[in-house]
Amino acid sequence: MPRVIRVALIALAVALLAPGRAPVAAHESTLPDAARVARAFQAEGIALNTAEAQGILKDVHLALREAQAHGIGNSKVDFAAVQIASDLGLPLSGAATSKRQVLAALGALLRDGGRGRQPEPVPPPAWGAYFDSAVNLWHQPDFMRLVTARGFHPVKISWEDIGRHEGSVWGDRISDVGIWVRRDEADPASARLALSVRRDSNFRDKVLMVPAERIKVHQRVGDRTIEKTLPQRLRELGIASAARDRNVIVSNQFAIVPVPARSMHGAWPEGVPPRAAFTFSIFPYGSTNLVITDVIEGSHEAIVGPGQHQLLFANVDGARAPFTASRAEDRQDLLKLERELKAQGMDVDVQRYYLIQVPLRRDVAGLQPSNMGTPPFRRAYEGPVGYPAAPAMEGGVAGGVVAQSAPAATAKSQQPMADMAGEAERRREPGLARVAIGHGESEGPYFAGAGFRGARAEEPIRVTVVYFVTPVGQVSAKDMETFASAFAQWDGQAIWGGSFVVKQ
Image (cartoon, rainbow, N blue to C red; front, side, top):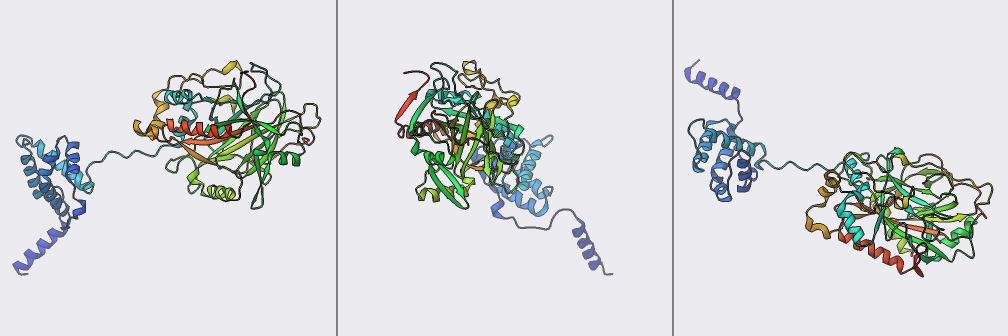
């Protein structure tokens, strides 16, 4: 074989077997700017100002093109690294540490496509940590200062009383109401009490008297929604009172519940709109009431009697299901329903929950309470390790728990909300978002109770109006203004407002 051909074949074989890559033209879009170069060099212990980074930028680009074509260990890249170190006035004698630092910075820029070493991205918040922060919001001093400064009162159990003695925590028709939000929708035992914000304390029980005709309830008949006034519905149920149904007692509050965002993980199956399941509980002490719950998808009835807290569910075609709370933007179907019903002149709100207590007589035989479940009260105030104990009970009465003076918050208790909140200048931005209420999956048969027709007690009806919101950042003064505005709207519908318990 001629010598020229043999040499050519050897050269070809060496080229095929040699490490590295064939020359590849560098894409100018991948070449870093001066700021990226400075970050990469800083990561290797070489601090550069903007002018210094700009001064070596051409040589860095040249070195990266050579590295892209021949590999980071090529002698041409080493040559460029020495020149860059020299231009920066870095020492090159001895162990040649500066050259290695420059090569390491060039290697990082090459691996990252010219972006340089970036800060680690913040992972999306986990549902569990967010859940704990939301249900333990009353342990956060900043939140407590905001609500108490406006005269509002956060509670875990709300006293929703029809009859209470003057200046007392006792009476002949008292009810405790709680909102139980589940960490795991399929596990009722995972529920914890949500926080509600009232305009006044449990002890004072400031209420409104509102014409009963202004309270509207809704029934779903097939695909249609039918709206009726509360007196109309009471007549249909056989529990109307000519003397007591002209006006009703109204108390209003905001429920602050944890509702997952789409960016969170660990709360719902893939493809399902994020939501949190919840149920109200009611404990009417020694009395019995028929309770009507009303949300945008319809109303439901249940009899609650003395003995223990009883859970209230949605009646979905004869099956009981927990209610669900979703961030409003994730329930476009309910927002569309709201728009359509409002266009028809109906009084609906996706975030509003009515709990209407109609008193029943004590001397009626054959009344059967619904008894569809009880909440996990033993774990009601349980929080993760690091949270302080629950605040003391107001008035010393079990069930009437209010956060009058919050304990000092731990760093752990504040961190998830603080992470979502941003900087202090965002304090004027709302930290609470609107929630849309729906219902979850069937959990067994629904039993409304029995024997209530004709059993109405000649006592007033109490309507608890609850608006659901969820934390999306640090709760702000703007949120307090929203609360105040909503309370004022109900004031405009009332014929009287004050306390029947603490005389004015």
